[in-house]
Image (cartoon, rainbow, N blue to C red; front, side, top):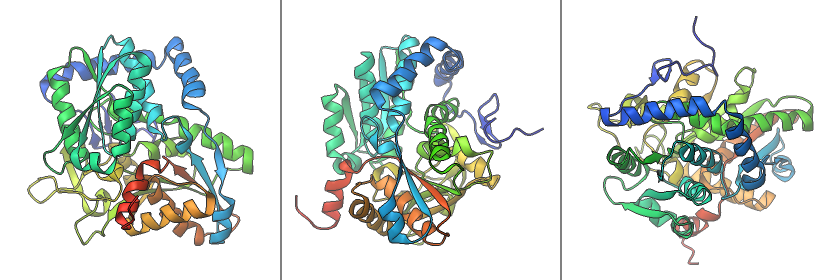
Length: 400
């Protein structure tokens, strides 16, 4: 009998036909060691107590579920609630996973952690976890993303991390991951790779999902308290897919509409986007079988998004599986739509969203407008927009 959503992956890390572990032999021992450690410590009460204490006193959980009254009234449709992951310490949901993996690395006896980052939020979160646990840290980041996210680069260095620029390929997240994997292959004995999303070789898609699922568990309790019922719709942006699966996971057994929003860039026809479900096909990439933007010969295509964190060629395998089961619907928002939503939320609610989260807000604006006033939507506000203000100003031709 096939497992239900939430029971996956299987013992080999497969979500149906997706996922798995496609890596060089030199990395297999590290992945097996990580899998064993995770399986041990996710049941260890001392580890869990330490993590829960840090979630409360360091990260700032539970994050609020905020009724966006002004935005709701302006649209005249469904009630919109925002899950405020932007209020987490460091400014995004990424800290949930990074702190947990840093604690795990410490218990595994690792003296060094590495990570990749696009928008910089995962890099900042990992550097924060490294500082907290006293572990050496190196972050790989593409040249283009360093340009777009100079504030976060300085934050990482301030936290004691070494930031290594990757100036090959597209000079974005894909290339940063390639370099991080090369590093891990070379230094596998003393180094743990803090992968930032629900992607890559098993056990990362499972482990990161579990560490981020606190978002959905909290949101479920909070909406039941506020409205005495479950929401009609959940919306979140999808890069690799950790903030979205973090929200969706607690609701998979319910009959609730869920929408994942990819980066539509300049439009699908333009070829300048990162909408894997709209323009991709099945392939193997960076240790994992999933949907991928590739040409007919299997070469990875270039991607584009105004948002550095969504500018990635592939997507987490569980998202593909849940799409096949019709549990989650996937759409996209263009750069123009995301930039508009960035301003709309800022002006109506006094909340400046990350450009990643603005893609979810853009879809929320469309969806809420078409739903009756009695309906309820939860949008995951995965990060705050401080890091994006300079880039938005540049796009608008404003000198700061």
